[in-house]
Amino acid sequence: QWIYLNGSYVQKENAMISVYDHGFLYGDGIFEGIRIYNGNIFKCKEHLDRLYDSAKSIMLDIPLAYEEMKSVLIETVRKNELRDGYIRLVVSRGPGDLGLDPRRSPKANVVIIVEQLAIYPEEAYLNGLKTVSVSTRRNIPDALNPKIKSLNYLNNILVKIQANLAGVGEAIMLNSQGFVAEGSSDNIFIIKRGIVFTPPCYCGALEGITRAAIIEICQKIGIPCKEEPFTLHDVYVADEVFFTGTAAEVIAVREVDARTIGEGKAGPITTRLLKEFRAVVEVDGAK
Ligand code: PLP
Image (cartoon, rainbow, N blue to C red; front, side):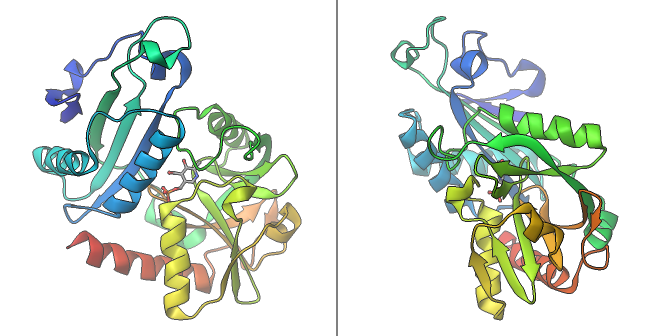
């Protein structure tokens, strides 16, 4: 397995960075998770745009120009000979001293890992996941903007820990005002009377690329889709609930906080959206 590390391709066991890296010391950095379908990088432009926007927002200089980064991504995928998989692209502030000052970390670290993906079993897409809401709150733009896909994932990890304790695969995070924000690493959608809803990003959701793809598919096939704030009550009484994400794709939810959603399995609109999404990745992935 070849890892891209600052201009070189190295084997996994040799891929190492300094303990003074500020990504390690302070979570100072950004990342992307990207899918490879049929040997092609899915939504490459969208992921690179989000990466460079995140970098700009936190004043992190990515040492590769946009087009260079794209070539390196393609080369890393090619070297690993994977037709279907997952790419983790990480840019950290780089090695510095023990102080916070980013001026002392003049050279960012760039790492690209390509791996096979362990996703949910196919059964989960048919039967849906059980999920719970958790007490961890998503920070909304008074703190770190959730649009920045930063290496500060402690909030999300606390959500995952609460999900693990509840014995479920994914959980629902609210924002500090009590509106639904997203999952630990997925966006959330609900469906009521044929209308699809997802929280606007200002509610504390990452501007997910799968989320955008689903909104686009809804428009294309004529299913009304609205970005509107909603509460847990709306989730409990929804006809269908699903999560979206690069790794999860479109995964139905069958239970939230012990309330059965709809028929207790993937509903008809979720099933249709998953089918349409898989058709898009087939075509775009084959480009
Ligand atoms: N929300 C968070 C916090 C995430 O980490 C992710 C995963 O990337 C998502 C949502 C889903 O976004 P995307 O569809 O771009 O993978």
